[in-house]
Length: 448
Image (tube, rainbow, N blue to C red; front, side, top):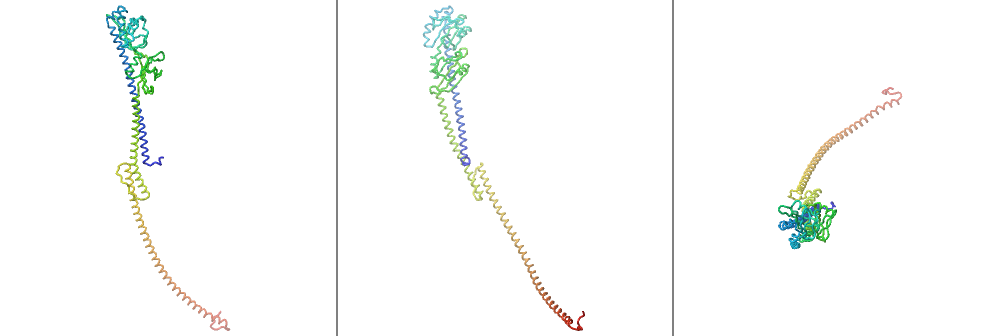
């Protein structure tokens, strides 16, 4: 694959892939950050609702305590408690309770005597005299410590917001008075209407939890382990869907007046706006990443083109130089980058090759001239030698001719001498033959 792609395409693809990877990491990082921001926003908003619920309970507790304090400060109340006059208290506060029950959400209005005995239930006058110390710790503490005690606490009628205030006369503690405000479905419905969040209370019941009340219609986004963690003063936040609506849910602790966990409160708010914001952020991030990828590819192509064009041009020049065509023109590049350095190096290479060829040609010419001079010297030497040999040969030839003439002369002389010798021989031989033939021998014949 790499071999089939040109330099320009490889650079473009490399930059595009790098840009895509960067965009992917950027998008994932942005979504991770956005998700974290949304989670923190959910937690902050849910905690604000949780704090608002705690504040609402505290306000209701203070309101109950304020009403109890008003009753406790009335001289008629103190007098009736000092005289143990239940009828006087009924006559005094019976009509009052009927008036404030519906208008101020008062469920309970009662008086206690130490340590925690019900002296008068204004909301239920016929029932009194029972010991409350086993489950009404607010009454026990208020009578023991002679102090105001407010907060959530269970009772005969269930969980309620209590405000217990001591009653004293002349420094003598007489008992306590308590207002118990509504803490049930009306309270939860009112909280949802004011805060626009669903709420549900899960009270500890032995080893498990039971639903005390709420606006979720029995639904829950948490399990028993989450309830136990919330009862242990822990918080859990989750994103889920409620009837196809994205929601964020928080489960936190709910405590009584003394800080002891009673159970867990579940708060569920509509999370559609945050999810829509996350979707818009996701689309925006994808759009920006896509635009960045396109721009990166375009810039990469332009960069690759600016790099590949001079490289391809200089490659063509180098191919021409390799083929021996040294008259090829090297493109002029003024850039001071690596490509410019490469082009200048090729120009230097071309110039050096031209100079080398010139030098080689000059050396070849000098060598040719030297060879010619050598050939001329050898030719002259050969001519001189030939002339010398010719002269010698001529001299020798002349001497040979002369010797031939001399030899001929000497041959003639020899032949003449031979003939003379023969003649002499013949002359000398005749007398001997004659003497041998003559009888008696002649005088002049030699003796044998």
